[in-house]
Length: 374
Image 1 (cartoon, rainbow, N blue to C red):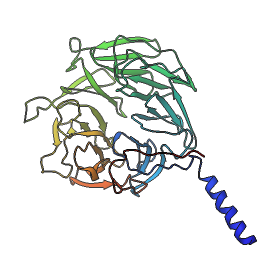
Image 2 (image 1 turned 180 degrees about the vertical axis):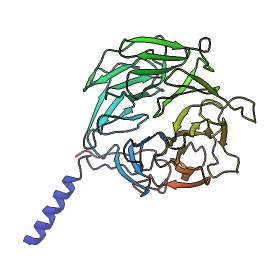
Image 3 (image 1 turned 120 degrees about the vertical axis):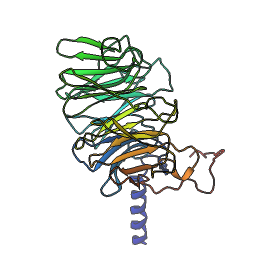
Image 4 (image 1 turned 90 degrees about the vertical axis):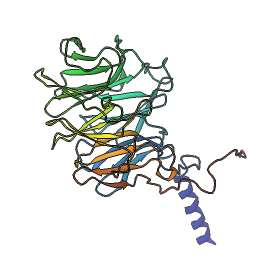
């Protein structure tokens, strides 16, 4: 009898230890990946923003090594849209539906409009997510694509919003952190000298910029700035030299658009997401700037990627391309992350379904349920 009681007691202790979520556990697979960020130290690691939370993925072992979701920790972390890595620590910042979170590898702190001094974008569209980008000194830029301005998060505190005459679409700093670049929606490129707090505005009328409506920015290890728009890519060197790169799509004669830019620092090749759900879309492109050669991969049954729309793309530290296609019809492929090797043009599906959850169990829809209170 004593043995049975001890066994029962151990069972209840185990249940209590694993019921911090009141008995509920997330059992699903990601159906959308909105950001792929390679780790800045480990070349085999990727950080993923997904619709079921944050995921760290090891490309060499093809396994998920860390995650945050609705039931893995307190506070819960749901849909993640954007994330950034702190260059001064192990912290990871990410955006949620109504705020941001900061994860140090052990614990999470979340900040919302209701419980903090976060204000940027609070009164703008609920359908556009907040975006985050770290400065070189570890402070955090927070912005929203339909908000006039941005907000800084420094040492656990939110600064007062910085109002601007433009809506930032992307923000990056140079390698020394002395300059910040802002892609705007109507006024071209804005360059902030942080030491003097002075701004320079680059537009098609005073520079080689293709467009006033910019989409994406990237700074490489040589401090070259890459600027993406609907008309292609411009570059601006640290010495102020402009270059322009453009390729017309053979189907409609329009330039390839650059919604997201990633650079292979070894080969200097560019990976450009040339697709977006809200506009015309043509897969992704690998660009050799030395010859202005755009190799486009789309849904044409001529390549293993074979998709037209990608929600996120990036070069990994291993030199391979990682791409998350938006799947409109094939349910088993929803949430797929593809590893693409440009030199061999071969593809491998990555296993980010860390719970090994099926797409559906008996039914695709739950119409109702009830709970009997204790």
